[in-house]
Image (cartoon, rainbow, N blue to C red; front, side, top):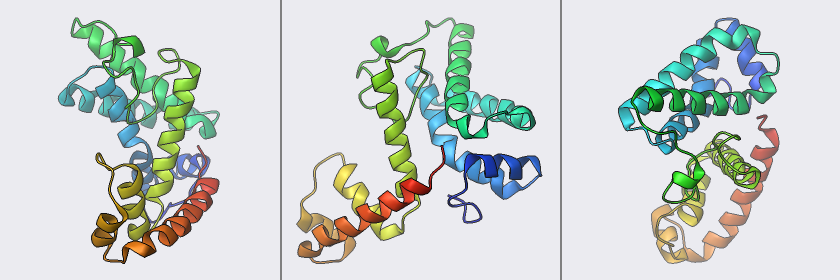
Length: 194
């Protein structure tokens, strides 16, 4: 997260963006950029089309910022807007619109939240929780980030010995460090507003 706004609520970021603060705009894009892009990719678009969707959603957001009535619901608005723009582009390309049942992994490995109209409520809640946890991890220091990514996001399970080597600590310290990092993550999550 941009250092000027590490724990900023969406309402604070939106107000700062409207006032012309470029750092606030960067923080907003950093917070939601991966979400927007991943929705386009999971809708079946290639990287170039996903980049087009990202740009279109950013332009729409920039235009709509002054009229957003509930900045605290920006996350959901961006999800719906990204999904609609992805669907619109797929239709323009002559491709069918993709829903959860059309995905090979049935949405189990989606990187970020997606549109409520396309996914069951439980799946949407799970995806939004995953996005929130990843945002919380980004607010932690580099050692905690590396530890938590190694423990929970590594494609292959890593032993405490391997994690200790990566972090240059003893393997017996991994458990204690994990407990401290998870406590910091809980605190970071309580400060997130989206």
